[in-house]
Image (cartoon, rainbow, N blue to C red; front, side, top):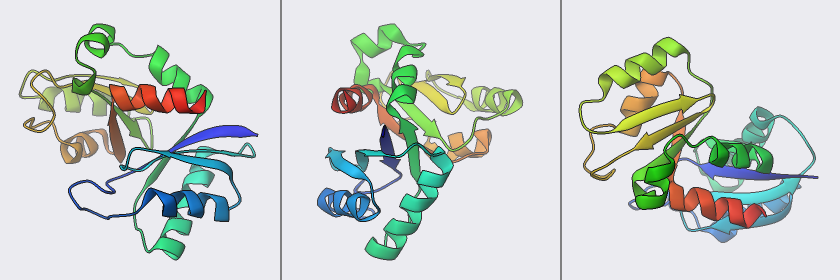
Length: 179
């Protein structure tokens, strides 16, 4: 069995797409996965299942959420081993220790090309910094995420892929949950 982390995009944020975590855990179990756990109320799940490609799992979860919960949202799946790599690959270690709520990991559906990353870097108009590594973008928001002009829609447009972000505190809490 493989341990997976599934992140849902834009649920329970500002009243948008409200879904109880108990319903998500029940859905995961109903779809045949084991030991579903949730973290916080923003769509963070951990579960176990047979090894299979992330895109297949994402499709199963997205279709199940639509059919059983009426929830239309994207799921982003990573294995526990991939999550450990996300943590080990953090290029902003000082910020992770000093201001973990200002460091965001954006989990992406696809790895953007080098030209897309350059377009994103060129679009940054403030003090934010970004490093992209495969299907993950690490973003530092020195003055906070809420007032930044480096928004998810801008990031997705420049990288030409969808994503969902979690601050460093949540990244570490998910790692602790899978261990």
